[in-house]
Amino acid sequence: MVKGFSGIVKLVFCGIIFCAAIPVHAQTGDLLVIRGGTLIDPGRDDLGVTGTIVVQNGLIIAVQTGDNSTPLPTAQVINASGGYVVPGIADMHNHLRSGMFKPDGNSTAVLSSLLDWGVTATLNPGVPAAEFDQLRNEISRDRSAYPRTFLVRGIFTTDGGWGKGYVPETPDQARAIVRELKAAGSDGVKLIYDDMRWATTRPFAVMDREIAIAIIDEAHRQQLMSFAHAPIMELAKHLLEAGIDCLIHGIISEPVDAEFIDLMKRNNTCYISTLTMFQTNIGYDKWADRLERFDLNRQLNLAAMEVFHNTSSGTARLDNTAWIVEHLPVLRLNLFTVHGAGIPVLIGTDTGIPGVLPGISTQLELVMHQEAGLDPIDVLRAATTTAAVVFDRKGVFGTLREGAQADLLVLDADPRLDVGNVRRIQHIIRAGKVHK
Ligand SMILES: [Zn+2]
Image 1: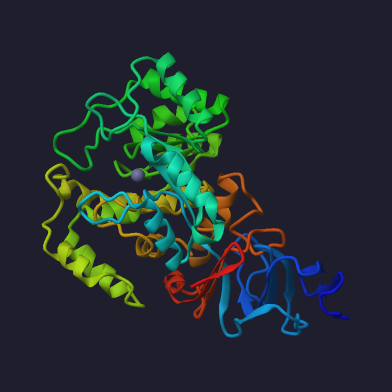
Image 2: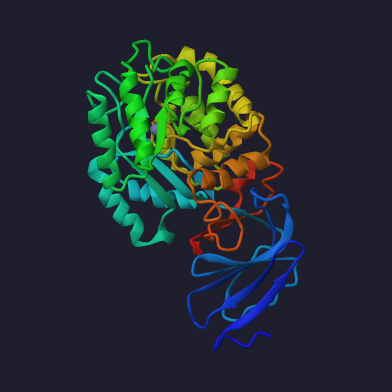
């Protein structure tokens, strides 16, 4: 049946659940075959069958179950037998910074290093305006060199509020800025709506509610997603009433109530906990211990770890460590409650905040979701399929289906038993290319 690649060859793969004709066009693009692994697609019910995935021009073109695939001549073959094939991980709150204590401007280096840890999709909710175009251009230069990346240009805050960014004084000004962001190619808007009581004993100012409402409303008119840093429930409810699309720091102030859940469901608002970010605030020394224990392949820079061990808990501006320690169980409980209510949960880390190191923090965030009581497969779903659905890319990434981008990990241990097995990576494939 296989006639080489001088003409159009059709292989028909019919397995138990997948069945696909493979149109292989002559000499176009690279063929990659990943054979014999256990296929785990968190978006499907038929999990865990043995099979083969065929990739061409960066896309999955066929999936065959069983172990009897016909070898394709000229294809690069990965023998995944005994391994587990999963979609790559999405970290949807990542500032593309090193996480060391001094600011650094090398976003593209961080972005590329995320791939080393199996992160194949990410969102930076708050790219400094001056960096935005350059970063966008660099990413589009070679899609296989970086994760699939969504970028939000700048952030909205207020006078005396947390963070540096746009400070509109009226709702009309806020709307005008949102329209500028749309024109500049931003993938959404982000607003800070938080007095930071969880981090500091000297709270910050909170944005005027009418301005927040205008930002969200104008974002929707411009078909932009709205992301909010709003971990205090009473404040988050203001934004939910205005239709906010995603809470990107969970809720830490108190256990979420029925009204909160109803509002989340009404909007189909997504929920990102950033457990790692909150965890680092209780002390860098303990956190460094945990990172070192978790770092199976010794990928961390140990000299950098020394800095962490020698840094005392918190920083001058984040002096409310006692509050965090008391409220971390609430943050975990809320994740469990929100997930149980069927609200879309995504993985995000706030990478770049001191202590939240690229890549390893994403893997640890998955583990911390499991520790909060989620089943490993639900955590994997949050990190793959759900991210794609929320970002309106269902079937485009985060799945092993035909037609999806081939962003895949081959693991040597089963992530359904322990989601921490996402660090046992044999191969990383981004846009069909094997990442070295
Ligand atoms: Zn952030």
